[in-house]
Image (cartoon, rainbow, N blue to C red; front, side):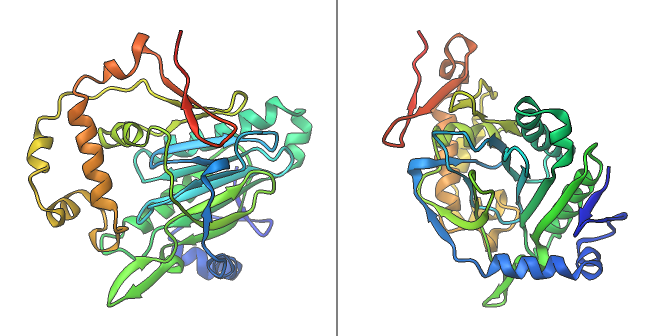
Length: 313
C-alpha cells in the first residue's frame, strides 16, 4: 500500500531532497515542528525508549502519559499512531535492519488497534506517521536512513499518512562551521498524539543493560507490555568482550571517533554513556546471571513514578 502526503499518494521516493521539492507542505510542517519549544519531560509518567527499541501503548494506559527518546544524531525517531483507537508507538531507528524495524513499529500499533476495535473501524481511520532526526552529516548516513525508512513504510500493507518529516536538511544547523541536528529528542503525548521536541533526565529503567544489548548488536525489540504497564528487558546474551578493557584505556576523543557515526555532533554525555555501557558488560561477562530461569527482567511503575523491578517468585 502507498504512503500518503496530504491525502495524495506518494510515488517512488528518489531522495528526501526530491520529496521536499515535490511536497512543499512537508517543509512547512517541519518548520512548524522546529518552532516548538523543547520540553523537559517529567520522569513520573514517562516511558523512555533507547536506540533500537520500540514501545507502544493506548490512551487507557494508567502508568504512562508520554513516550520519548533522545540522543539521536544520524538516528531517526519515529512515531506511528492510529487516529481511531489512539494506539501509538515510538521507536529509535538507526538503520540496523530497517525492514524489520519498520515491521515491528507497524505491528506494535496494529496489534493494539485491531484487538481493541472492530476491523471496519480500524480501516476507516488513519495511521499517521511522524519522522524526526538526522542531519546533513558528512557520510550521508542520515539521508540513507530517511530514504530507507520512508521506502519501507511505503511497502507496508496499510495506507500510512506522513504528517511530519523533519529530517536531514530540515533538521540541520551549522554551529561554528559544523553540521549538527537541531532536535536530538522527541516525545509523544499518549492521550492526544501530540509530538514535540523533548529532553530527558531519566533514561531507564535498566539503562545500562538495555544499552549493552544494543551495543552487542542486538536487534530492535519491543520493550513494553501496555496491558500490564510493564517494561520487559531481555533475556539477551553476549560473548566475552575482553577487548573492552583496551577500550577503557583510550582517550575520550579516541572512543568518540571510533564509536560514533557523527563524532562532531554527539551530545556532551556520549562518551560517558558509552563507558558506562562497556563497564556494565565487563562487570557481567556471563549475562545469563542477569536473567534467572532465562526470564526477562520486568519493571513496573510505582505510584511515585519510579520503575521497580518485579522479583520473580
